[in-house]
Length: 202
Image (cartoon, rainbow, N blue to C red):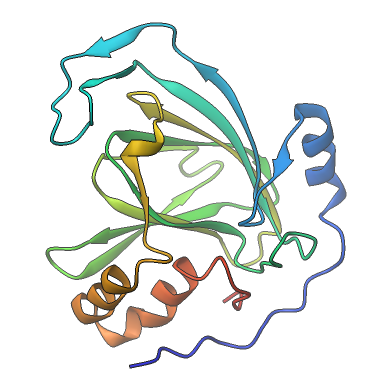
C-alpha cells in the first residue's frame, strides 16, 4: 500500500546567515540529505573483544565525534525539505549535543517490539544532550518553527560504517515498519525514510 507524502514545502534559496557562518567557520560540508557535516575527533585508543554479533571484527576505536548542522537547503542534491537526519540504526551508543540554533531538534526513537515512537526534544534549555542507545532505530527532524540547529554527535564505540544501517532504500524493512506501526505514524515514518526525495515539513 502506497503511503502518500504531503505537499512539498517551498524553501528559500539560501540557508540562514547564522547557519552559514558556522558552515564557513567550522568547515562543514553539505551532504546529500541536506545536512552540513564534519568529523572532528576519533580516539587513538582501540576497544578489542567487542561482541562480533554486533561489531564485525570485534574491534573499534573507543569513541568518535562529529558536527552536524541541519537546515532547509534547496541547493542540496537532491533538494530536501526534511531538515534532519533519516531513520537509521547504529550498533553502538550515539549521544546528541545541541550547540546553537533558533530552536530545538526532535529525535524520534522507534520501538520495534511495541510499535510505538518516542519523541525526544534536544535543545536549550530543556535537554541539550541525549543518548540514543545502540541498536535503536532513530531519526531526527527540526521542530516546528526551527529553521536551523547546530548539533554534535559522539558515538561509542567510534563510528564504523559496518555498524550503520539506513531504512531508506530497504523496501522490505520499510514495509515491515508500516506493518508494525499504527497508521497515524505513517506520515512521520514517510518523512524519516524519504530523504532522497523532497517531503513536507510538518
